[in-house]
Length: 248
Image (cartoon, rainbow, N blue to C red):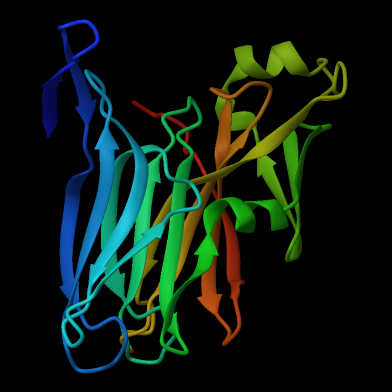
């Protein structure tokens, strides 16, 4: 909503942009048996899809009180709300996602849960990303090794599907590397709530793109399934998916 007013100093018209409701959800997020109204709010920038000062506003059904909770990463595109039980206590938690707008397709994500009658942040994508360490190295004979430190695993990607022109830039005719090449693994570009066990408790499926010589040189994705262990989210399972060779 845009509000206009006249400035007494110069007689002109100025504008300011008030917070707007981006999305609304209804659910019992504290287990009191009453539905709360959860508003995702923010200030939309003029002539841009960017939102700033993204905030949760919770109207409690029993007490009729309102609470405002700022997000750790409160700037983004396409902010959305999801309600679901991630901790297994049969109470709905609040999952907020937004796009950063960068070239890597990186996203923001944060989960809020009721703990001791307080709504607290129990997960945010940036902090969890900082716990994840990877290395990506091209090795002889048309392969790339991807190593994860948490959990400690190594994945070998066969690069021959990339084609002869691609391989000729990197490898000698005998399959040895012309020079050392290292890639990297991006932060999360996708976070999706999935109830794998169909028991009413959601896990998080997180995607991280594996980049080769440059960002557009994608080699695949690291897929982490995050699960609540009673104190924090941990990696329950990890796999790597690769791109297929185009046969058309």
